[in-house]
Amino acid sequence: MTADFQRVYGLRLVLAVETHDEDELLELVIWLPAASALHSCIEAKGDPTKARQLFGWDAQADLSLGIANLIAHQTFVLAQVNSQKRITEPEPITGPRASHKPRSNLNDAGGIARALLQAQKG
Image (cartoon, rainbow, N blue to C red; front, side, top):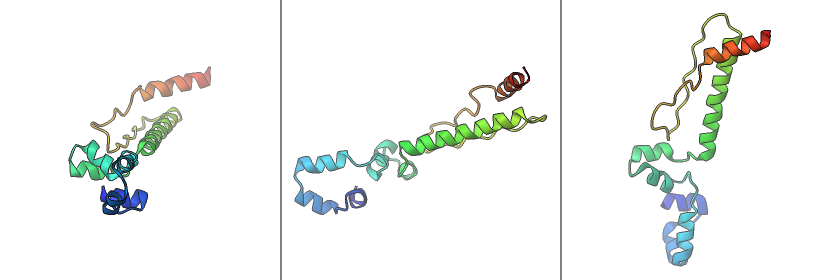
């Protein structure tokens, strides 16, 4: 938490404790960003390796990763539509919050490709 106070607020934790009352200090702790070391440690439930993976990882990073995986899947479907051969589907990228490997294909990409071809022809 010392590093969080220095990085986020520009305060040394020791000085913050000495110069702020309890309510102000609690406010500063509560409003540390979601990607802070403190929140990473809490989410990791004491596992230092998991906490290091989570540090700096916020909702924006989760959304960006989801968009990147979606674009990769969409690109695969479009490539499959325009190819005579079977193309290997890309593996999705997992983030530090993934407890298991995400399902690479929620729907049948080959079926999606065939439907797109049919729609294009008809």
